[in-house]
Image 1 (spheres, helix red, strand yellow):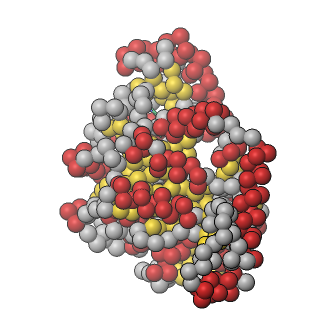
Image 2: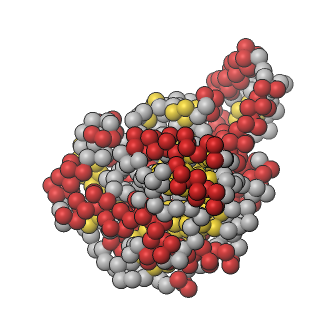
Length: 514
Ligand code: MV4
């Protein structure tokens, strides 16, 4: 087993990986940019090295600097986390060349999945269901029109080098196709330096469901169940759950077996995720494979009882998978909320700044993976994901109930967060009945805006109510017997004198408040 691992990442995922290393007795090496000098992953690691200025291109994306640190500090392996260099085949190759183990798949597997047309070709060959369409770049608008006429409109134009929705165009009719293709090709060229665009039949109101796989370096591959990831906004996932409420045991096994086939066709090793689009008839189609540990991996950990980071490290160290497919048991339900530093009242715009007060939930079946602490300054330079709050239960209802309770206890001051959004989602009738597809969140937010418009309130009256509430709280702190308290604790309204059932309790609380 490795003695020392470098974590080429920051935030909650770096903290998560450090925790796994600590459990395994592995020394951790953090890297940080100038604005992350005091970040939580730096404070939690055994050693930490500066790698440059705030912009990721000058720090967390600098392969040379990270490999220099690895050599200097004696790291035997590098965990890339997600984002940054995690799906960069050149980095995986540079690690191999430097004699440092990259904790992830081979450069070859990463390259195959990096090109969407190449991946489609390989998957068709392997007998994996893909969305009807072409597996090569379109050479002319005429070819596009021909294929579209055959598979039927609407169609989707996609960049071969894309993923995550960039360079993607929905086309409803042949009249739109020529200009849409030109647009998609030029956007693909601008974004990826590669203008290759292919065509697929558009799946209407799809769900996004993905399957976790794990493969060791001895030819053993297993699937670990699916995650429902349809709740997203602008290709950014917001809430994920395992299992998917629409997947039954038979569909799960079929999806799992297809995912294993995908992994084997790519000679895949380590942890990976096979993404599927699922149509309204529950047909599923291979979309792409993510060659990294994903943000939402905790819901799979909670429902399988496995530790994916431990297993990634053991696989990278050359160990065999310590279990077989028939040993994998899925139990209960887990729901994850991604807590972002963004302002719900300002179109979910990033909201960096200092965290002045932080009260964090815990309790039965609540997991919190966090990269923040009170007093920390959230930088503007990176993804605004602060933490993930995950609720587990024996069924979906219990997981949701626990999550609602925990969310009500979460208090972050100094910056804006999207915590309020989750109370809306978890209380929403369509969410409760699992009427989900990739358009769900946009519909919910549109509904909310209507409600807000019809319930428009006078901001001056709102401000006065706020002042009154703060004043009540202050009186409570200064004088536990004030009308604003009951048994020494603050109550919501300040009407009438508080009863005093127990004097010693009140004294104790007033002491504690000093
Ligand atoms: C699609 C699709 C409908 N039909 N492909 C968006 C991101 C990229 N990875 C694939 N995406 C889609 N591909 C066909 N043939 C709808 C989407 C899509 C989507 C997929 C997953 C999660 C969220 C999404 C939001 C909008 C569109």
